Amino acid sequence: MRHSFSVDLRGIVDLLGRHLYPSPRAYLRELLQNAVDALSAHRPADPRIAIEPPSVTGDGSLRVHDNGVGLTEAQVHELLATIGRSSKRDELGFSRQQFLGQFGIGLLSCFLVADDVEVVTRSAAAGDGAATVRWVGHADGHYTVEESAVPRNEPGTTVTLRARRGSEHWLSDDTVLHLARHFGSLLPYPITVGDRLVTEGPPPWQADHGDPRARREELLRYAETAMEFRPFDVIDLKVPAAGLTGVAFVLPTPLPASARTTHRVYLKRMLLGERVERLLPDWAFFARCVVDAGELRPTADREQLYEDDLLEETRQALGEQLRAWLVRLSTTAPSRLNRFLSVHHLGVKALAVTDTDMLRLVDRWLPVETSDGEMPLAEFRRRHGGIRYTAGVDEFRQFAGVAAAQGMGLVNAGYAYDAEILKRLPLLDPEIRVERLDPAELATRMDPLDPDAETSVLEFLTHARRALDRLGCDPVVRAFEPVALPALYLEGREATRRAERQAAIDSAEGAWADMLDSLDETKQEGPQRPQLILNHNNPLVRRVTTLADPLLIRLVVEAMYGHALLQGHHPMRPADTATLNRSFLGLVEWAVHNVEDPT
Ligand SMILES: Nc1ncnc2c1ncn2[C@@H]1O[C@H](COP(=O)(O)OP(=O)(O)OP(=O)(O)O)[C@@H](O)[C@H]1O
Image (tube, rainbow, N blue to C red; front, side, top):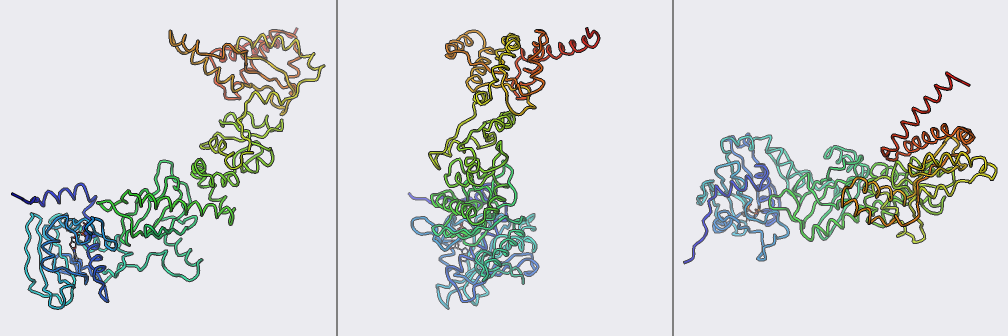
């Protein structure tokens, strides 16, 4: 025997109210949507939707009239009284293009605010003699159908709601006016609430202003009122496959890193939401869009866009259009591009990591910190042939001045995405040379001393070497710029790696330490120790190299070693800290002793 499911309407309404619709306000959207669909199905000469709020009906009820397609009695039974039955779907289950509704549950949302829903309707299709049918559905799950005592004089439908106790505010004049404006201001048929027209005509980007500058100004003004910011620029958007038109407003300030950009989306000119996500690719955080799309689908709660192939395709196409705008800006208005970059550099850099056009744009236009001051990478290459960079900000601060003085240009790639961007530069031109600075290389650029000077520092060097040996460091004397810098601690990249490995071995214990130790293949290689480069051009250093007292030389060299470590933000091992302390106290003692006893 076959049986049909019976549905407990209260349970379903509860489900919708709690889990599908985030707020009961959805009821007005669903009523507007049905009225619009009814007009799209019939298209009378003077289509209109008239909402009568309680102040007009006078009996506390809300009425929504349309002069659309209406329903016959048979359709009333089939469509209004069957949950999930919609006239707007084809056999394959896809929503028919011109309609907003598709699921056949929208009317149920009225039960979120009312216990009874009355529909009085007359079908346009059934001709002049069509009866006016009155259907009343109750939240407890039963309904009545009868021929209306008052016949309608034109096809169409009137839905009447009387607020459930406690829900009166959802039907109040102010709320209804606000909701009708919110959801319906761009809808293609005139909508009135009482005697107020809430529709505003076509979307602002479709309005014809004749002059493009006037249009742009109008759109900027629209953004100021609708989104509360004066955009940096407006970009027209169009994706025919999704029936999408609209505009992207470029944000005048960067978003906080954690924030997601959201968009105002209309579907067939009904507002889907003001905070719709995932319309643009993630990288396009600098734009907020307002769009209307005919073909994109909503999620069942009508709050977000349904994720399908068409949405993905649309996202790509919109991304393309924003990218093209950026590239266009770089050729037609570089100064505007520079202003844009100064605000949104982080996002553009993120984009350049995966996108070659953006990489080219960053290369040519985005100023980066270099030892010659701020300039785009392309300009830096013009001056220095290739690119040598430091991967950390500290490293850059330490070496930029010295490197520049030796005629070596340095790029600071210590900020987000910098190093990845630099490594990708050869994609633009395989000839581009990019290498990371090896600090050890700096020493090779510094002038050795002339033979006389070299001889004069030999004895000093012997003492200095003895002082630094147990710290794993070799002293070297060179003449370099800037004169003001007495000493520089240089650790080659290999030496750094080795120090890190050694630190790991030192902090490990037992078998683990033995294993790390045995893995340390560099043990077999010759020593590559960090160097303390003392600057012979510096007057103080020059005097120090002439000292005769081995104890004083040791104290001075140790102090310079500690100072150079601190200056270069190098990590201080316990031995380094102890050395610095001891040399400091030793020098104080030496100074005091000499003041007391100058002999
Ligand atoms: N104002 C109206 N004029 C004519 N027919 C209507 C009207 N309101 C509802 N209907 C009919 O009732 C059916 C069910 O409406 P309901 O709002 O529940 O679902 P839907 O609009 O089809 O889909 P959705 O759940 O996406 O809103 C509609 O498909 C439509 O045929």
